[in-house]
Image (cartoon, rainbow, N blue to C red; front, side):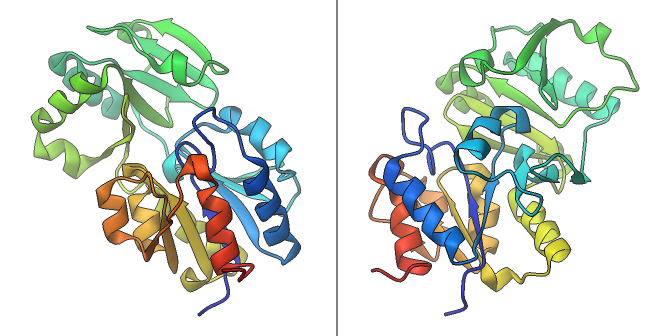
Length: 271
């Protein structure tokens, strides 16, 4: 088996437990993996501002530490240097906003750490998911044509989102990346922005191969990297779609140190 040199980790439902904490076992396993020279890359739909505490907790703040945020839309050194960035333009967000209004769901537009909470038919639940971000109530008429955004978020009742999904026209799927990252979060990103593409760009920059990447995840926004990575590991709590494309399904969930198990099996070889 090809040696793992980069470990790509989703956060919610994967590295983090249900209390949004990194367990002692996961932290210890990550420290041992890094001692063996493995790069640990948090690969998440969250903005950078929402993962800074985790980067500091894991001591991933050196010049040669990297993070992939916005589901691959932003790649950077954890010291702050942006290596790659893909954003929405005004016409894109106008198109998405029009559809969400028709569907009766919320839409928040994210620009780094700022969240523009657009007036919508239902209240957004996104502040309950990422309270540390700067949430700004906004009318769409206040959005300037020269503004750009990392992604859009529809966060509302899970049943309402699931009911809305079949009503999204095919042309929108052709033009945007649309997927759920949690039961109450539907994400809208520019076409081609997903975790596999983000990882492909990063390994090209730092000189690694696809076969040397292990990725762990659980939700729809992890599917591309689980399928792409040399070693794709699904958590026990992952969706059926993720388990289908994974090389292996962990016998343990995010609440049972599933990441630590994957590291022990594939990096530390303690299995």
